[in-house]
Image (cartoon, rainbow, N blue to C red; front, top):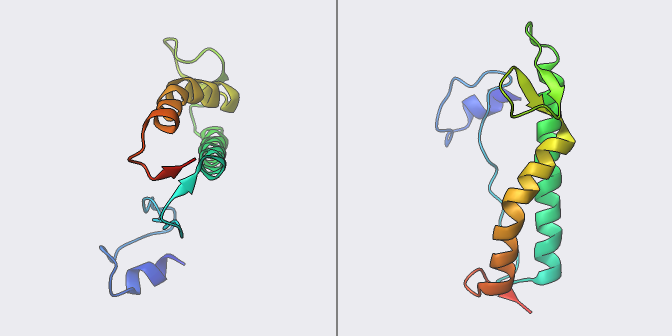
Length: 113
């Protein structure tokens, strides 16, 4: 699969190898505006994607020669990673207020009532 990226004429590089991190995939929204129900679904999908990606990272961390302790002790000093629940709860605390402010107060993001 990565070979197709190396062979693509518009590829920014041609030495991709299996498991390289390639960056974000751009998506276009088909409409000019997004209503509140749609944006809530988009945010929920995005957060699920974050959780899924972090869960995959935790699974990879269990293969490390020096395995971190996974649980709720993070971010205390030591070799710890948060569990998926701890990670997503912290992410939600940090992102929720900002997301809500944007949903309730900003018209510049193309939201319609």
